[in-house]
Each structure stands twice: as structure tokens, then as C-alpha cells.
Length: 349
Image 1: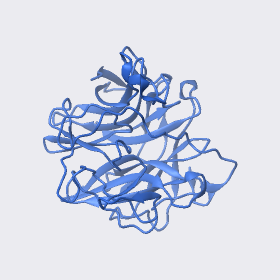
Image 2 (image 1 turned 90 degrees about the vertical axis):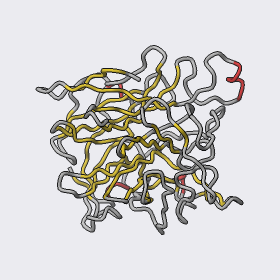
Image 3 (image 1 turned 30 degrees about the vertical axis):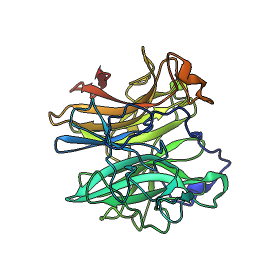
Image 4 (image 1 turned 180 degrees about the horizontal axis):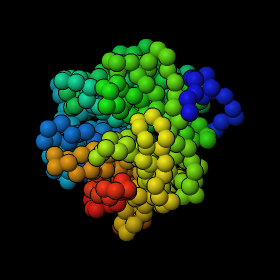
């Protein structure tokens, strides 16, 4: 199914759920080990090292971590020009933000993902609010860097994708043809996930753009929300991971689809989520698949700790045994059944 950009603005639509500025987050100290709030995580492997990025946290536009073992993560080191370690020190001129005395321009960003487009060329796709727009409309932009650590730079004068009711949760996926595609979610109800072809350079959508419907809410466990699409080609199959239900609850969970290709004919192979609340891990979401050097399929995701689900309204949570609600970075190992392509969780952490 294809849609034009105009069609995406039609209908009586409700905005997606808002994410409040969290209270009680663990502070991010540049260069130090970090285990705190890291929502909507994405991970990219470059050689022996892994780099992770998250939605705005701790006053950083894009927090960034690195690891060599997927267990211990260090916050991005500060520099002379940016001692905070922000991977995206400035959002573009069209975004709604605040000019700071330290030279940074801070704004709310959602679900950044980083893709390697070639030697010394990395692109970060993310959503941010459009200045002056009604209803705090979120739209998608791109920032680039010569290294996965950044800093990423976005000199755009307008979003690359900005339908009437907004767009969020982008991923740049490289098709086997070498062409970049944008995987994303439209920011209204009913929730839907799309794929859109980009130009060959990966700097904008193609001139004759169509938006291919990948998925919509279908199964009871998904509630009314489907979001955070992330695609990977693994062992000859296309897997599209996603989150569903209310993120600030134990009902939030991760599912997946198996697609014929990177833009169409996606089917749900199971009626239940792949990852859901279990033991001390509550409300897993924000999935991002990647592979390790041994070829194992890994899945980055964020989850609450049981007993501390949802961002608190005050710092009283610090006196509780469970602490304050934070969506911490987790890494699962997945296994695949060769004949059917069905996935299973081999190891949660």
C-alpha cells in the first residue's frame, strides 16, 4: 500500500502519547559508566565497539554511550567545545528549543538512530518539535558526522518529513540495492508504521516519494499504540521490530513482523509479544536489532524496573527501595528457527 504525503494529513487524528521530562534520573557524567535512564535506545556496531543513542535525557539533546562488551557502557566524553558530551549539541534552526549560554541549542529529540552510509559517513535520523507549530508537532530530520561518536551536525532549514500531524521514530535502513529507506511512524491515531524511499545520497526523501504501509495496530496486546519501528535483514529474512501499548506501564512490550522485503508484505508470526514484562524487567520497548561480531542477533531495548514503572512526579521515589522510574538500556540475545524464521529470546541481558 502506498500513500502520498498529502493523504497522511487527513482525518480526525489524535496525537501520540507525550513523554514528560523525567524526574529522578541518574546524572550522566561524560566519560563515566552510566546505567540510568536511556529511553528509545539504538545501537550501532563499528568494528569491536558499540555505540548507543537515546531520546533526550539529562538535558542532552542526544545522550550517547559506548561499550566493548555490551555490559558496561560509558557516557560520551566531553570536548573543549562541548564538555557535556552531547552527541547532537545543536538541533536545527526550525526546531523548538532554547539557546544556552554554553553555545548549545537544546530541544526535545525522540528516538535517534545512527546508520553508516559509507566510509567516514554516519547519519542520525531523529524527531524533534517544529517551532511555532500547533500541538507540539514532531517531525523528522537528519544529522551527519564523520564518526559514530559525533558530534552530529544538522544544518537543515526544514524537516525531511513533516506531515500535518507529525512523524517520529525514524530509522535509515539500507536496502540490498544500496538505496537508503526511511522507516518511521506517523504521529497520530490510528498508529501506523511506514517505509519511504530516500535519494541515493541518503540526504532527503526521493523526488517521487511514496509511503509504503508496513504495519498498524492489530493484536489485542498492542492496545492502541504501535511505535519504534526498526528493521534488520538477518539470515535472508526481513524482521521489523516494534513496541506497542502504553510505554509507562507493564503492558508495554516488543513484537516483530517478518516481511517479504523492506517495504511491504509484513506479517505477524505470533499472537503474543516477543519481550514483555517478566521478573524484574517491566514494560520493555524501543527495540533496535543489530548483530555482534559472531553473527548473533542482538536486540537493544529500554525497560523499567519492577516496582518503579513510569516517570515519578516528585523526588520522593528516591527513598523507596525500587528507586525512581527510569527506562534503562538492556541487550537481549535472540535465536532464530531456520525453517520458519521464528524468533525466541535466548538471553534477556
